[in-house]
Image 1 (cartoon, rainbow, N blue to C red):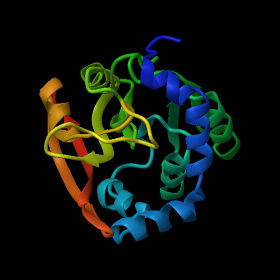
Image 2 (cartoon, rainbow, N blue to C red):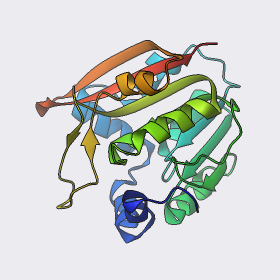
Image 3 (cartoon, rainbow, N blue to C red):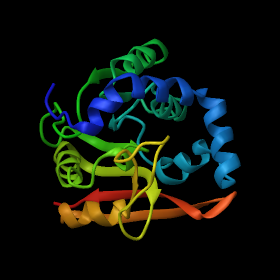
Image 4 (cartoon, one colour):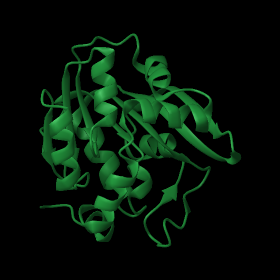
Length: 215
């Protein structure tokens, strides 16, 4: 597989499998987690950002893990869904719950798709686990395969900041990802962004953003 790094090898292996088992919450559990953390469910956030979009859009999730986010989009009525993940164990779980979706293994550093093939490409808690030196490549890859929109939810900071993660280093960073996208992909414009402080620790903030790719 192309696009392997120190980080992707961790997520593709036993460390990533443990993450999958620890975070496979199901849709109700995921909504409850967001309600507890932010005072709003993930389903409600998705409706705020995507509720008016046509349901026949072609959508790619980069780093889909077991497919919870794709399942939430299915519940909204979206039908043309593709997911990609580095971890084969998570993909096997995703295929069980999303037989109607296209699911394949691959790296965000080398997306196995033609240019401009998806209407919307998104990540959720994925960019935070990519080393900052590799982010420009990922931004350009996501922008390359998106024809129209890029959507994301990631851990936010004004400047890139490393955070220890389960006792390890070089596995988690928070950053202004919507701004960085536009730095490396100048054709992108910001449609909407919401900052979501954690209710139990307002020093921690997530950012949900929607970007549009201009001609």
